[in-house]
Each structure stands twice: as structure tokens, then as C-alpha cells.
Length: 214
Image (tube, rainbow, N blue to C red; front, side, top):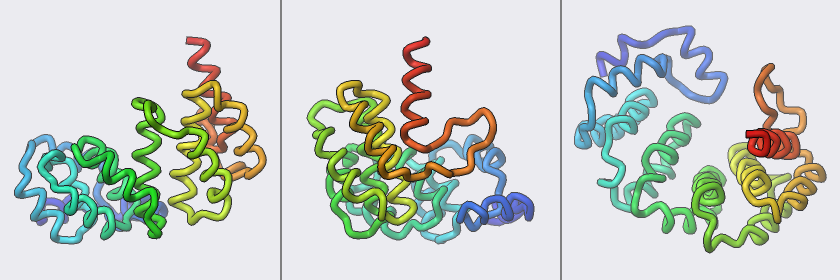
């Protein structure tokens, strides 16, 4: 914890806080510290219990994802509110867990929008890599009905799933584009030069262009 405190950078904190993350550690330095520590699951648990954002990010880098029980991961997602911690928890830990599919199904139906967003993130992963057994048309039905008025983080996750369906599954592309055009979610989101807009119709069109041009 003292070493993490020594890495605190006011400029990094200012940037991170604009994105809702209450820590001031440069992520490159955090990853270097994790590389030095290597996997230490017991230490990761103790770091997580501090409830400090930087410590939790470090914990997620040095933990053993498959060592967590389903109930532990469920509790961790429910107590996580910092966006970067939530993102790393889902992508670096839950996705590698043998409990990922059971948690995906449970979280999709959760009334907490942050927890539900984790379910949608796991669903997006399956849409891209293991779509067998998914009801893609049914997912589009839910997105069509709920995304427009969803809270920000849940809306973002649903939008990502919408785009992924349109990118990966040509038989659903026309409908995915139509939903995006009608709902206009993230249409005016500021996008840096050289980056692809998160607005689903633009995102889908650009990624399909790249894939077909490859």
C-alpha cells in the first residue's frame, strides 16, 4: 500500500477522476508493479479487501482468476463501482472463470444496472467468440426495447453487444443497423481523430469494412 501511495500522481488522478475512477496511479506503472509481484492470490485477496481503487486494480492483475468461487465473484461485482475496476474484474477475471456462463445468465436479469452491465459484457464476449446457443434475435429484442432509457454503464454495454452482433453476424446486421439508427444512442459521443465512433451504425459499418478488406 505504501508503494502504491508513492506512485500517486495528481495529474493521473485528475484524468482518472474525469472517468469516474478515484485513483492517481499511472496504469503502466501499476502493471510494472504487478509484473514484479507475479501471481499472488492471497495478497490479491488482501489488497481487494482494502476497498482502495488502486489496490483493487493491482489485485486483479496478480490474482488467480480460476481460484474464486462463484459467490465471491458475484459479491465483488456488486461492490465495485469504479469503472476501471469493474472493467478489469469482468475482462481479466470473470471471463477466465469456470463460473462465467452461470454468472452471465444471472447478471443479465439483475435489477442493478452495473451488475447487469457485467452480464452484457460477458454476452458480448460470447457473441464474438462462442455464439452457439445464444438467441441473437432475442438479444436484439431486449436491446431494442431497453437500451434507449438504460443507465449509462448498462446502455454502453448493451450498445457494445448490439455492435458486436452487427459486426459478427451478417444475418442480423440489417436489423442491428436499424436499431442503432432508430435509437441513436451515442450518436453524438465525442470521438478522437483516428478512433471509431461508438455509435453502432458507424461502428458496425467501419469494422465490417475492415474485416472484408483484410
